Image (cartoon, rainbow, N blue to C red; front, top):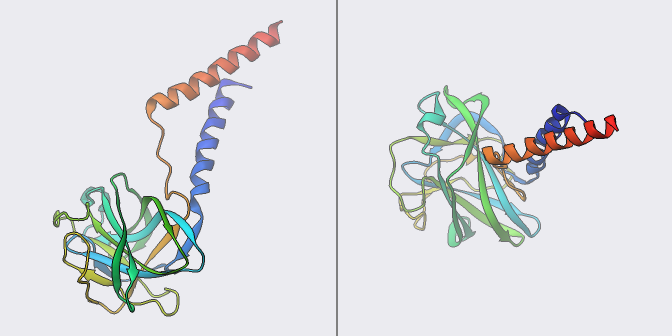
Length: 225
């Protein structure tokens, strides 16, 4: 096996690990290019229902801004809460977390008139029984004020039937009271695997390439004996 092939195999293994992160447990619908809910000036929450008990690890949501260059305006961190359902509205907080390494991918769509991105958020480990819940998140850590970079959670027209409209709160910690401010649902997916796999540190790639080089030398020696 050549050094190049060994390196390519290492890259393939890494790419495969990324592909395995695509298991969707709940699909809240695709963006419709019509509207959006601010997650910078407020905390927005969307209802979802799980048919079976699961442990959530990844979130993908669709978002845009008042500018096309969304990555340069996004603060980089998403704070989130999972809340119980209280008669069709956000209830008691069940889990609190954040991801400071959120990944952005241009979705090739616009909402409305601005470039729309997929936001990939790792949730850690959130075990939930079958039932109805609310996912709430905010640009920045929960409890932090608006950082002035207006990011919007995209609306959807294809949410599962019976899904409540999104709710929002200006409480910095993302807790009640929530109020229904717009008559639409928001586009997102929940996964039982991480939304993304971190890119290996340079030192990790050095080890991988070194291993490939060592394998190449060993094979070369055997071929000469």
